[in-house]
Image (cartoon, rainbow, N blue to C red):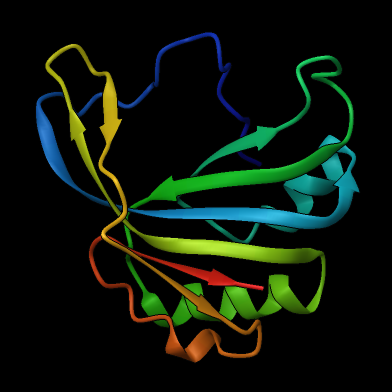
Length: 138
């Protein structure tokens, strides 16, 4: 199981001085989940960095959403994962190939999205993984 990085520490990614696109997924749960349950829901997203979002006042408490980032290897598998989440614990999912620039020191700067496309939760097959386009499935 992937352990989320400490938000007070810099990213553990080591590819410095690089620009490109990573798959960026933001999953909002139907209701906040206990930390372990949230990780269980996300466990099929292998190869992604997982950041669980919890309120600052209660960092060990329920998790309302999570962000996953990493390379897009298999679009069909990602669509299947999105469909499974949207039929289960996810209220909405934002997904797209997000542009980034990683400095020589390792700090990552995310580029603004070029376009947002809002789709019904049943239209996962219409997610095209275009660079700079964020799809919102709700």
